[in-house]
Length: 530
Ligand SMILES: Nc1ncnc2c1ncn2[C@@H]1O[C@H](COP(=O)(O)OP(=O)(O)OP(=O)(O)O)[C@@H](O)[C@H]1O
Image: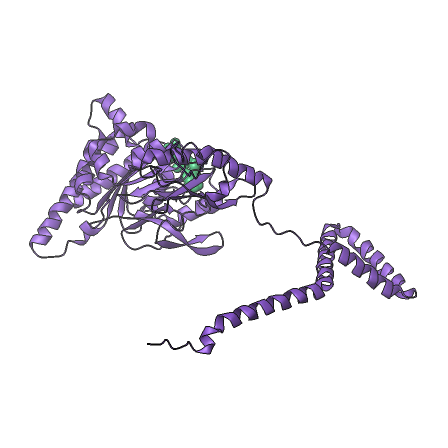
């Protein structure tokens, strides 16, 4: 069958479109040629006006009056002399044409120094991304870096802040050691002291390196809007979590990406271990957790270091004990273990009789321990039991009994943690300046970013169960009784503390004495009510 010809409009359409495009381009070129002097003068006038504005801004205030007077006098003289205004106009146009004769060059690629950096990075990668028997290697000494660096950005100091590298398919990108070698090399060559994120696209044979901005340190203690059973440990990168928490940051309110930890019967990581270097902010994080826990539950605090950094909690509603001494800590933890058992028995009884669990066992109980290893050493010297042994019941059965254990420890004492503590604290936080190996020893995974040597207090990494490793910054929650605390932060923490149970003297309490008394009273009271 003979083919019918296409309708004319379809067969000749593309030719006419091409013709129209060419016509439009020629018209635009001609218009640009005709208008070129005008464009040049306008550009020059803009530049002259900008320069004038800058000069005016740089003139000291006391010299602006005389300058204005001088200019006005010149304008008057020019206006009065014959042909003055015309001559002035011609002069200004001439100056504008001269000034605007050259376009401000638009940066289209890296400058010489930046090209040097990219070439150096390329050369450094050659031994890792090439083999002798590759017939057409992507990486060769003296080769073209722009064939393999498909995207790059530089920061204000001319250092690479983002780089996309295409690598050969035979590179063993599924092996952690091979990746680590490349990451270390790029980290070192691009400038140490910054935090890098490496994203490997194994299917596309591409590596994307980005420099991360430091997490903001401006957030302070406040009432976080969370559901019951949720605790904000800190804040992380925008794209790392889906959950945001509305926060007040200075004068503004914004949604911040929160590291939110869920506790209670349905939690898969019901207890938390916080490890850190000295002064890294572990006490501050525990204080922040205590303030949030007090909104719906009761807390027990056992402070191993005995520096009285939890004195502000003493005697407050919901604070059952603040213990610094060994004897008090042991009796408090013994009570906590038997309370956990009581809750379990009560819950079981209620279930068997087909009733809801009583209110008192549904109220969360938090056992907060700051450096219990110190008390462990004291106990060993004394020949008594290690406080950690008393944590076995709350750790093993706390989830069903609404009992949560949070523990802080310094890196050098982590060896002393019992197996029960290790296996039941599945939520983990690491604070302070640590090596990737130290982070892995606590979180079970190395972070996918490179830790920096300088970290502010409260900065580190968090991992909830088997989730991903998140960067974290803990909100500033200082000791309100510390003289170094600013007035605004002191007030923020004091506002979050519950009322005092009894009237105590307004002066700063002596932590050890006051705590022991409070603890024994509280535990006795609870034992009696049992
Ligand atoms: N998230 C934070 N934001 C701002 N400052 C913080 C933060 N965390 C801690 N700091 C400050 O750092 C200092 C040390 O904090 P903190 O006492 O909590 O650390 P630590 O790890 O318990 O130290 P150590 O156990 O060695 O005393 C304090 O001055 C505290 O105010």
